[in-house]
Amino acid sequence: MLASQPFSRLLGAELTVLEAGRCELQLPITPELLQQHGFVHGGVVSYLADNSLTYAGGTMLQLRVVTSEFKLNYLRPAVGERLVARAAAVQAGKSQAVCRCDIYTVHQGEEKLCAIAQGTIVRLPDRPPGEGA
Amino acid sequence: MLASQPFSRLLGAELTVLEAGRCELQLPITPELLQQHGFVHGGVVSYLADNSLTYAGGTMLQLRVVTSEFKLNYLRPAVGERLVARAAAVQAGKSQAVCRCDIYTVHQGEEKLCAIAQGTIVRLPDRPPGEGA
Amino acid sequence: MLASQPFSRLLGAELTVLEAGRCELQLPITPELLQQHGFVHGGVVSYLADNSLTYAGGTMLQLRVVTSEFKLNYLRPAVGERLVARAAAVQAGKSQAVCRCDIYTVHQGEEKLCAIAQGTIVRLPDRPPGEGA
Amino acid sequence: MLASQPFSRLLGAELTVLEAGRCELQLPITPELLQQHGFVHGGVVSYLADNSLTYAGGTMLQLRVVTSEFKLNYLRPAVGERLVARAAAVQAGKSQAVCRCDIYTVHQGEEKLCAIAQGTIVRLPDRPPGEGA
Image (cartoon, rainbow over all chains, first blue to last red; front, side):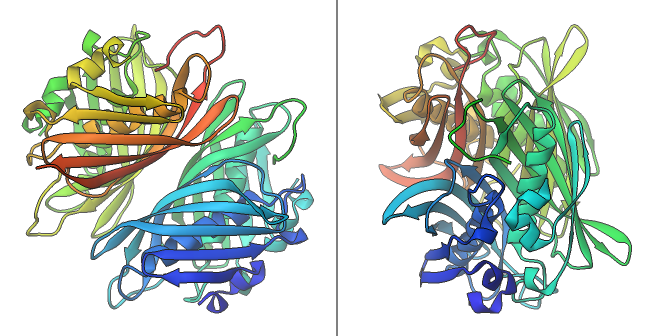
């Protein structure tokens, strides 16, 4: 699935878990993902939030889905070798799923929570004009 | 400023306006920024939200700042030649600024609002351990 | 409309503007709306955000609607004689509207912005099991 | 603590758990807390989110705190005899705590998740001009 997203390929994201209501994405930290202080750019973290929420919600809905909205709190600077985003659907109906996400940095094998997110994934109409993940 | 952020260079963002309480970022839409349906990936839009909020808030605070949190609503698929993010500080105190952001797609010269965001930018301690934008 | 909501009557809210895509609610500040420091309780402000967003979005959608989600930033302590919430639909489709809201305190005739919000209003199914505003 | 908040007394909230990083509030559902369709008004749910997040965060910070911002997703209509809000601090530093909250309806002894929230609690300056919970 990620291979079909040029932007996910550009960043180097890996889909490591995908099951009913649950998704895990991993992202090796490379120099081009940083900001000016040597930490992972917040936009990379928000990409992981967006995408993991979408996938977790998408497993609970049929066909094509899209992230409608999300909210993200950054907890600490993201440093280390890798980021791991774990998202889960908290509630799912026919047309939308509400999901949460925890994003960790992994440094020397130790995970630290660096951001949390909460958002809504919606099912697109059957004959859609566009968008989706 | 953007040139000091490897991730902003990777995406190709341009800082087109920066003044007290206000920031505009632009981003030419290139193939690697898309998702699987040919629209700009939501993570690109969230990068613009994060970064434009940070800069708008940063103009109102002293020294180094960081985005503490933000919330983003996607309004329509992002297609066209270019994205434009305009952020403004709604309120600023000594230690934090609350900002809003409108993100537009530009297609054949026409702007359409495709996402809106709201978030908090906080000033980092004077002798900081890290992070910032 | 507000008169049909027991909770809005309990708080004493007044619907002062309601037109396509726009709503204004006002709320006289009374002692029972305060918290322990003499300021209006955050829950009162969040009530105004929720309700004004719902009404602004509801004018753009047909039939019954409900607030799906919202995000609120408190900007300053709410003190004065009255609160005024002004909400507007930023974008509306067939099934949902995304709205923003500014909440002001009014003290001796002067308005000060004390909170801002952003949220999603969704249209309920035609034959609904419940809820709505 | 709740007894010192006139608005919490007006609504009838009860503080049932308060320990390091954790808070539970309960609220018996009474007719005046409803909206026009017979469900608990969203503003009551948002009050519970705001207050439980503040208390959970407040246990991790010193002195006086205030909710800076929060985001709330409504999951289902709130009906039943009672609402229960459980909040926990996910991360806490010296000046702020990021918390999550789950809000349940209780009907005939059965709990159902009806809303989830996420927000930031900040410590007020030592000699403050105001606000707090």
